[in-house]
Amino acid sequence: MKHLAIHLKLLGMAAFWGASWPMGRMLGQALPPLTGGMLRFLTAAILLLGWLFARYRLRTLAVLSRKQWLGLALAAAFGVFGFTVLSMLGLQRIPASRATVLVTFNPVLTMFFAALLFGEKLNGKIVSGMLLAVAGSIWAVTHGEIAAFLSGGGVGWGEVLVFFSLCCLVTYTMIGRAVLQGIDALTVTVATAWLGAMMLLPPALISDGLPFGMLAEMDGRGWFALIGLSVGATVLSYAWYFEGVKTLGAGSAAAYITLVPVFGILCSAWFLGEALHVSLVAGCLAAVGGLALMQYGRRAV
Image (cartoon, one colour):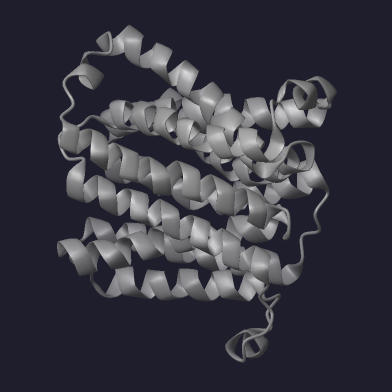
């Protein structure tokens, strides 16, 4: 098979991004949310900076304008700070498998607002996929009790927090479309990781103090989660994704993102022993089918 190594790396990317939700829950059990999120992005930022130095000698950071730095700071405020705080708080309240299924709202909302704000074209397949993905997510999160959801029940603060964390990611993407044009993806990732980590640092220190004592007492599961989130779900995944985009094109690489909820549910069961309810699996499959239909529809636009 041509480009087998690239396809395997993209599969690994989807696995890491799916596993990031149960690992986030594990890290939240080992460290306070602000400290855990800060350490994740600070570790990733250091590694990413080394990658950027090896590739560009940091020249791409030096030429950024004041407007671009402002856009990067705004993107970091939503995509790193807002997402981290809300998702970590949400994962303290709901199983990681349910949070993973909610991730399917991310591409749906991104597509909707891209059409609304930037005039991206939609077609019947894309709209049908969006509706199927949303319906599958709601079915999974409510355990099939759609009527309870429509009447205002079946959803708690955990789901609300995770949903708004995903809204932060959508805002991050929209900011990127609006003000970060002309900056390569690696530079954006490095800058937002550093800026986001610096935004998380003061409230983490004020709330939790220096993390050295907590790190010394952290068990193997906590270290596994921290390293997995920093190295696997951030550095390696972005490297593999960029390589996939370069070799196969953005559309083919992005298609693997539809597998993220599947890996998320499987890893939640493996790492945390979470039950695989029929409604959860059925809703996840419907949501993944919706994402696949959206991806297919995008090729026809």
